[in-house]
Image 1 (cartoon, each protein chain N blue to C red):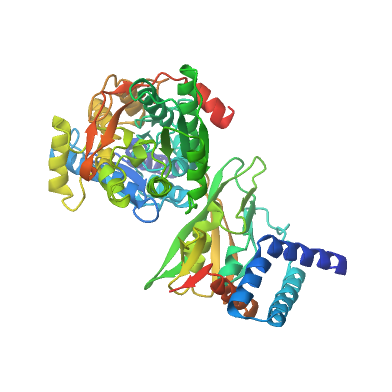
Image 2 (image 1 turned 135 degrees about the vertical axis):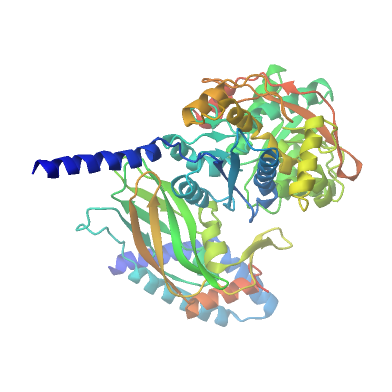
Length: 222
Length: 402
């Protein structure tokens, strides 16, 4: 990835952070908690550096041209279980080779629930005239991805604080870390396709973000 | 050589004779049972409405205890979809292809139902009484689907008529969920008011995840509305009443049938639900309507742990015509005969409004009645069944531009 693109990526992400009033909130927090501007500077430097590396690691996945039957790809195919990280992730499931104008549902296989493993349908969508589908979640609290992100990956709940803002309440461990198979099943034919989603523990930066989220009252651990 | 050919032919004929009876058998129907499925949220944010699916189970238990239908018992498959369309799809596929159900009964939710509507139609699976007042079921009519829930746009019209004609309200506002459910109510209310040369003084929407409704209430208050219709989730129905009371905003509140479980609403609003008017799809829990009393006895016998509430016995009401059609089919129960039997139902009276169907009329009713929540969360009936006269096609045009 060129430096120009990389810089653009960093600026985009920085703008996203600024637009969310994180800086404003953090400044208020710093005043409140007597954290020096120097500490804030270091925290932001670490976040920016990791965002830059995250940007470098990203390459759009493509379908395998050698497969003629149905296939599916998932982006990202690796997710770290930081609360803020998961909430800000845009999941995209793309499929091709399905029956035109069919519909599909995507099931996450072998999710540990108590003593047993269960298969959980998580997304559904329509197949277009060319036999392709695309199912997207949006970053943040979007209805399409809410159950998947909060209910299935983080195993958290939503609540509200005294300002009436939506907060996340984490009271149990998230989904176990492992490689999960995501299976797209056709409704009107016997076509199926699979891909994998690797769930990993939170990185240092993810933990930092969640710590900040906790200080800001956006993430509550019970 | 000749012997071998003859042997092969005889084997083929024998094999065909063995398999032919099976290929003739109707999916989900045997000599002794009829398989019927339903999805419904037993867990998750909409689990309050999951009582519908359990109510249908109780209704079928009662039918089976009475001897079944022409010697066949109903085998009922209830699955929890958590109000998630992806799960509804998986359930529909499992119940049609593995359990081989003959038909689907009810099923809570517009989005969940829409996720499987085309699949059920393509597989020729009859589906009676989706538990949502959406125009998606009957407009345009499709061969295997019949709606019994009064339309949300019709409920809005009936409330507007009552507010204008009886309560003499002049400034009516509408608070709605920003989806098909809310919008169909909104456009029904707009059309009903246009009839009186009036307009809504405010149209305020909420997203399902909103938890703070202060700004919404401020907009409603600023409109100086003397009456507000609520077309939202039960939790929003409770929050908006509480927030408005704190802000000193006290209009006449009115709500859709989805918020008509008054004992629950009264409890979660700590009494603020008193005097709220609502529309509904079936007799009230305290009614002495004979058929409702019979159903209440069935609940005491087959589901004694269930609360006798409107959503529980809605599970009876939504599928009463289905049982009627199964009876009309006699022993010759096929999908095609069932379609004819459903379409032959005219002026059918169960515990709700009268339902009539036909090949081009798949929305069984356009009527509802107005009730009122009184002290302690009980409800009283205010009007008789009232028909709605609005043009559904105009609502569809405004809501979906089709």
